[in-house]
Image 1 (cartoon, rainbow, N blue to C red):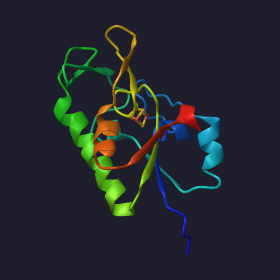
Image 2 (cartoon, rainbow, N blue to C red; image 1 turned 90 degrees about the horizontal axis):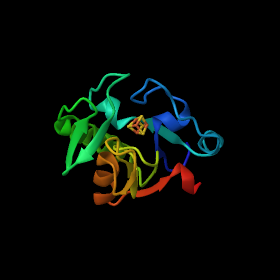
Image 3 (cartoon, rainbow, N blue to C red; image 1 turned 30 degrees about the vertical axis):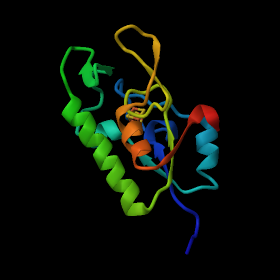
Image 4 (cartoon, helix red, strand yellow; image 1 turned 180 degrees about the vertical axis):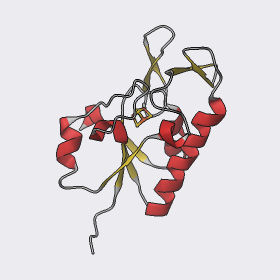
Length: 141
Ligand code: SF4
């Protein structure tokens, strides 16, 4: 038996092609960490039932709006809730989340409408934080 606590991790950081553009954001530090820690790859947007590739989205007045103008707030919320479900099942206390994503970003998200970085948490990161999960980004490793 292994006593190490699993850590939730944005799947794209581990090389999974789950981003809106069908690509990955593989991060060498995260990959190296996977050799010593139990990292659980999760993509809240895929858990939301969104297709890959898909239109990117941004947060406007608290709503998730795609680049095509579609309101997908219900889906992004579902993805966040499914992510939290995995966290609870596995007793996870910590997550490494992709910075600047409208789902996973912690403290910073890229606004797809202006291209600027704005303050705030992504949809999934916000729900995890609300539930006491420690969040760090790949930039803090
Ligand atoms: Fe990566 Fe999170 Fe975006 Fe999925 S939702 S592609 S895990 S940043």
